[in-house]
Length: 347
Image 1 (cartoon, rainbow, N blue to C red):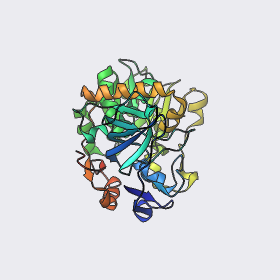
Image 2 (cartoon, one colour):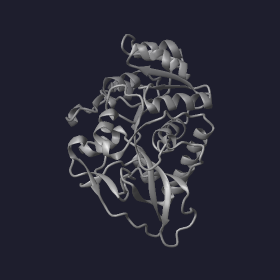
Image 3 (cartoon, rainbow, N blue to C red):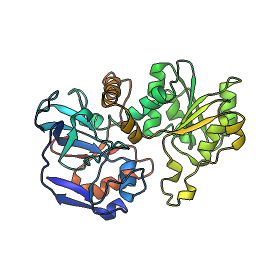
Image 4 (cartoon, rainbow, N blue to C red):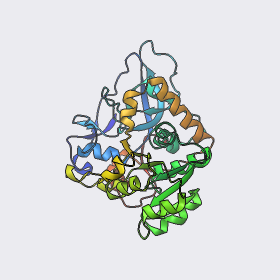
């Protein structure tokens, strides 16, 4: 089989090689998946650079998040699924947890407790993006912050994939959103998507606008994936006792100095206003959530996508041989479509 392998940590286009490898054999409790489509996430590329929260150990097949495919074989005494069934494989490495196979290859072996059957009405493009961004949005809004109908939720990077999903999910749940963007031309787009209020940091003061929007009661719940000064402003904008969940650091993605990977919080805000700032990382959630809870959450996401509550943008497909072009697109500013590696007749 073909596999896209990083021979060492480094810039993806420099260290990735297309190799031929033996098709693996599933053991008990495992399934062999014939991969149809698998995305290229920014986090996949940071893993290869050695700048993420875990290292796969090199050489390593790339892609450490998700894919869609069909079950080609089941390990001995493995029940609950059948050969030929179309499934999403959520292969996000659990932390702590054992290593898992990368998805940038034609076949991979996966734990059956990480496989979710998907209906034919979901395209390969949607199905292969089901287990990371939509799940993150669901967990942030419901599990991490338990935002209730009528409450305000403040979020940064509203135009990102997760940000857009948070808006869609919030509308479905009756949650009101205050959405932060950095470009004026993104404001109308976010409003059209369903964002209740939009703040543009290009020409507006975030803290003042939040106060004007939410009134005396303020905002008590927020999610941030920018970090840096913007994350600090979000914390400052919260009402006393507010909670901020940080799930990314977009402002530092090209930063290599660990000392620069910061959120400069105000001590007064944390101490006297008893605000809480904590992190969320999907890998660690998979490392602590019971497998049945993880599948239950994935099933809920599947239902939301099938019912068109959540909309996953169609990806742009690439054969595995065109990996340099695909990787370049993944990091191009405002690239729009998520690049996907496809095998066989992935659509």
